Length: 134
Length: 136
Image (cartoon, rainbow over all chains, first blue to last red; front, side, top):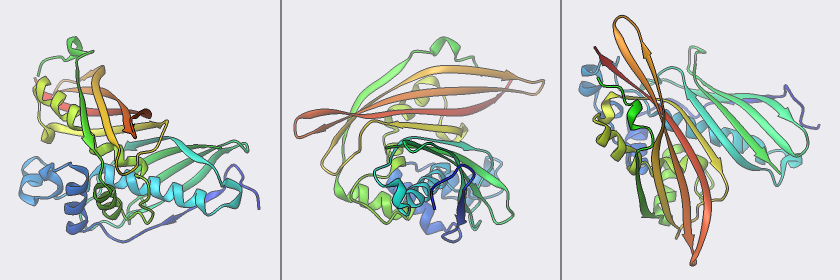
């Protein structure tokens, strides 16, 4: 079947956000803001608890987009040229986000995916747009 | 909190950082990426040193900053062995004032180049929008 506007990018999850994951992301990314690592600090600045790095969630949205493209034979040779993410709500330690969306546009040379991260309550925490070109 | 409008144009850098295979691998593992032969799309976030330095020069620290939006445009990929050069500027300030609070949306733009086998390659651009809040 050929790629069509409106086609779903199925939502997938890789499990809950863990302390280890945030610690590893802090080390790998260089973003050691304590609100992602230390509950006391997070609460002191008015957060409900430790929150995930927004960019970790964005990274997982981008990976979902890449996975969608690499699974479609029709999209071989398409490269990511632009990726945008907008942070709408916090992801808390222990939340289980899933990542997916819809094909916003496809014309054979260019593909635009509208993506989201949703938490276990179905709330959109992060929006993403990925533009690929052949 | 003072208005930062007069600071538009302020820039920091260029800085250079070496990209090792381990650095890419650790980032891939941390985000759950399976393929680590090239840096993932959001790997550019590791080069925020100039942006953090600008935060500092503008008088606020990381814990006051909320990340609102992040945009990347890609012109090339990053591979292990690259030396990445980046420079960040404050390009836009939007102020929102209510009776109780004063918020500023700051946009920082960074340009990335890579040195690979003595070639200088375009990697792309990033645009980071953060919100800082202050009481009057």
